[in-house]
Image (cartoon, rainbow, N blue to C red; front, side, top):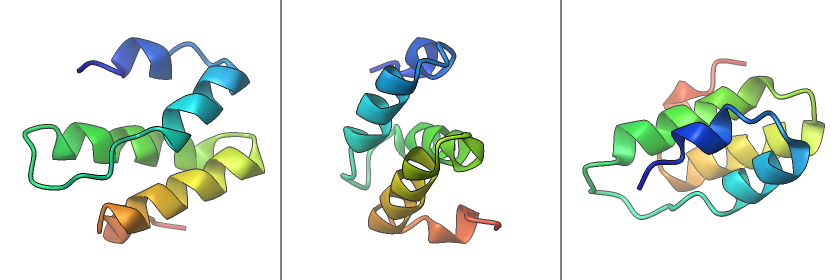
Amino acid sequence: MNFGPLVEMNDPDINTWLINNLPVQLGTEYDDQLDQIAVHFLDDPDEEIRESARYRLEERLADILITH
């Protein structure tokens, strides 16, 4: 699983799809990477994507990473 190239595309449709489909299962070797993807979208210009990123971090029990 490598979502990295999708994160860098800066396409609003891809960003929306990615944050809405980011896995929430915990206890995998990808937890840190998935959390960092969600954190990346906390600064997105689109408010809906920012809110989805916050929600996803809360679902992943990583809301401590939300700094604002």
